[in-house]
Amino acid sequence: MSKKLRDFVVTLYPAKMERGCFVTRFEFGQDLPRKRVQAASADEIVAEARTFASDHGQPCHAGIRITQGRKPAGFDAKTKALYFNMDMPEAS
Image 1 (cartoon, rainbow, N blue to C red):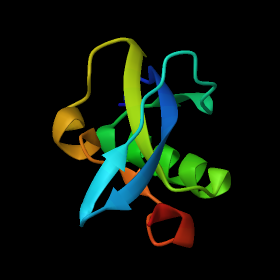
Image 2: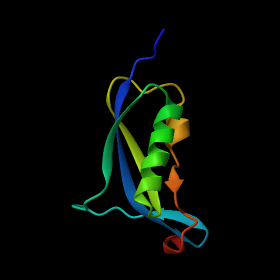
Image 3: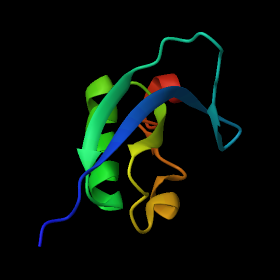
Image 4: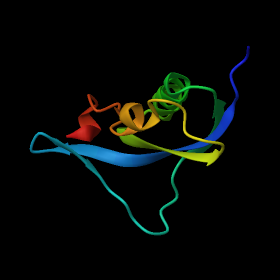
């Protein structure tokens, strides 16, 4: 039995490290990298976000929004703190 694919949008927000904490900056009208993806499970969407962030190459926080269907099991727990490329010099 195949799993049902759901539609998601992954948005990458600029992030940095300040005093030992991750900080994400939000600005109205900001042009952010976005990618539409399809996945059947929370693990698949996290893997897609990781690949997208690696290709982007800048320190970032990945925000994931479901656009069609219901959230897969474990979605909230696995997607609440997705920070990538934080070991780069731009992150400090």
